[in-house]
View (cartoon, rainbow, N blue to C red):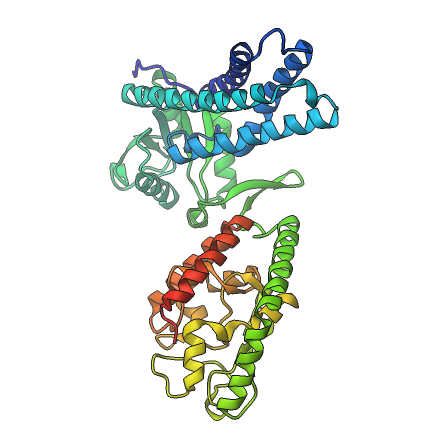
Length: 471
């Protein structure tokens, strides 16, 4: 029997949370003693109320930033950046509350600054101490979880293999149990220990923290019978995902009414984010059009004078929600050689491209008319680039080359994008190029923020000067 007493993650979270609240109070008290004097203090009661409010906000707001998620306890970047963001929100709410209550003049600005800095320093010290404590407990085996698997079939085997690949050294598999013994003495390297009745006896003799039932969900009656047999045990009992669940490990559970459902995909942009992005697009595109209109008029005139045909080229491409949009560009090819279906991409030294067109492509000036697409709402300044219909990579349609390709259309296409500023632009003559482009596009969609957009717009300027893969 394992004599090491385990540490409950819930207990660690509670202690972690209480420590943060204590830091909030102690930092305020220390700042009060260090910075303020009797001659300055006019309303001790207000300071006390402010400290109490700060403690309450800390206890309730910090969890919203994932500060106590055990998956991130040892992630230094999160443990440095997230507390600063959460602490800033708490301070901002207190300042707003004091302003609305018309008592802000009673508080010393110096005391607020000292409190904020000391509070953040204290929060960091708490995390340094927690990391040291977790390291020590890990060495002693106090963080390990003894897990028993019920199910020696394909689902149980898949679960064991997946846990092995996860690299979580604190999960200890004590054995596999099943009323139908497997052909071998082990399942994916874990010993077969007997039936469910054997598990009941073993759980009373040795430490088992969690039991996971890994059976096909279609075996409903069998699973319910196992649950009824295990209910008497004082351990956590879980149901492993069915086979498709291992392809959806990024998903979390939610509820529809009172029915649990698996959240496979969330809408990439909430209503609030869509409004914010539209304001960004309309405002910046309007300013850019005003500033660049003389340049665009000169380019249009130059295109007309250097080759017969229209100055603008309109091409149908797939946009938001996989709907066709008409994308504007300055014409860079000779009219009789300009493909209407967009299947043949421009290549280096392409004979179809005019001399002026080659310059416009290298400098990306041919894309400027897409600012009108941004204004009419069919495109955004930043997003996955729209591809011409039927474009191929190594003679394979994009949608066949990358299974996740269609997910790019969950947001509006952009004039520039995360893939482009990372060098994945231009001709897609290999499968890898479109794969890398889609990977970057999906990363952008999943991590959108206004700050991310502004970063991409800034990096685009450098990319235009570098002229990578632009022809």
